[in-house]
Length: 251
Image 1 (cartoon, rainbow, N blue to C red):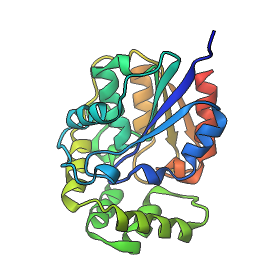
Image 2: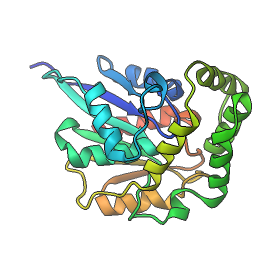
Image 3: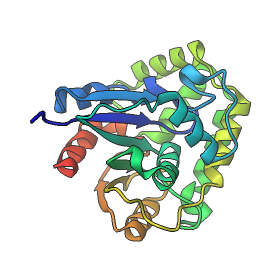
């Protein structure tokens, strides 16, 4: 019998794109030999930057399903790996189309109806997010890195890489605001997902309160693992830790 391989679908958050995953896709591919890794770009970001960004989470789900979810191979085990806004979209996706994935990983995500607004986006972080939306160039990317990362190695090199991404595939202010609105109004489904869910969270997250992930874990009765020191974007601060937790979870 042929051993079934994983197919990881990676979904990022607000104004970010596939290239912002950095080293994580390569680490995943090394940890799970023979598996596939597909990075999804939201409408308004990355390769889909010319697509109008929807104002709703459901609109994002519909676009991503049509754009990326090809008929799967018989030996394929589809897993969605998501962060922040990507996690909200993944949650809605699991509710509406539970047959699409066998399991899911949500990183530092939150939902209306589970956590209060001041936990979903800390007040101090809200000011930074609004400032980021109107900044440009390296100053913008440096502020984003400061907001989402606590331990970023090679900080200036990462700022330069993110600045090149923004220059080559810019996200418009309108698209950013649409994504932010979709995130703010995202409400959790009544029933927990029908597939196993791993929730990863950062105690050092300065953008989203870690209590959001704790409440979500209790509501869904899902596995929760917390990183002691990383920032909001654990894929920047400690991508190997993410892959280690996924390895344990998928066993």
